[in-house]
Length: 445
Image (cartoon, rainbow, N blue to C red; front, side, top):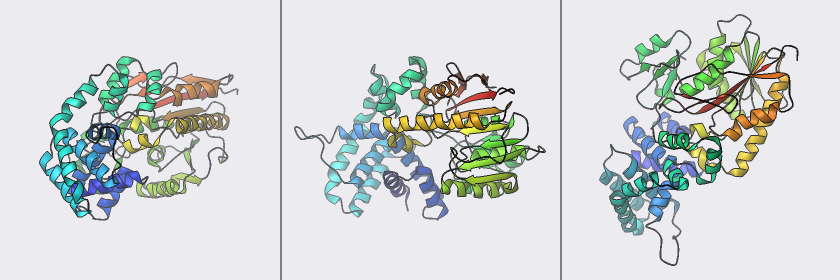
């Protein structure tokens, strides 16, 4: 499979509900595409999906038929136009002519030869005029047009406005154009060991997190040196910082209420391994994610240090009252949209509201489960106030047994919440956006 064909395969998977990353990993792991072609497929697919609405607006301008609106096109034609617009206007190191010719050949092979002249003409117009169109949107006085340029769903703009002032929001829109890069987490004390394995990969130590190594690009986990031995875990530094909070408060039981695939849980387990009496219990409602977490603990060599349970965090009971409850709540993922762009196009207001209801219920449960004197860490990978400070405020309304503590982070990569918690600002390509609030339960509660 060639790179352009691979990118189209990924776009088809996104339409069917699959994720870009998992589809690319499957292509690589199954040997269906060479490493160099996989890199091209990844660059094209991510570029196409990050600003999907923008590319449809750009090529849609050439599809309008006076008095008739836009014609209905086959999915493969729409995918080729989306991929072509993204590649021509965003990828600087790929020849536009080769991209257009590759897409036209694919259309012929799929029985769409009649559409080739139209697609060819549209893509040549985009190559000629598209850059000017993008710059007009970027500099537009209308926030709706700047949101379109940034790849932010326009329906979500009111939520962004309520969270951030004009300057911060404009900066976020710019930061969303930075191509993400991979960072690797190592077990405590193993960073130099992994750096030696990465001698030819360009890895450098992070200045933000002592167990992190920054890479100059993105990687497939299974192809990363040290992955099979549990020395390397692909994880953003924002995620590492958030998970590290679960290990900073005393001993006893740490409860991870929504452990997902076990990336943060693995970090917590590796850190707690050297602490006598410290234990980790993890809950996950999805059987697929639960099984992935089981495999992750085995890969890291810590299966005996973690109790993994499948079930609903609103009804499960821990083995004992935890001293720390780590609640990485399900959310919009708006802080990770640059790295996981497909998720934002599957959201709407109704889903966001339902997410908020679940977040409040989970946080109230976390408050009730924590032992007196213990700590609750509420976290999301969202940059929207309605999933963060508003949730904390609602959960603590009328409560006197809890105190919100300061988060131990400062610097240009952070923003203070209003009034509680701290945001991790996605100011670097190894950082996604996160929010966290640390809540202490009074000892006499």
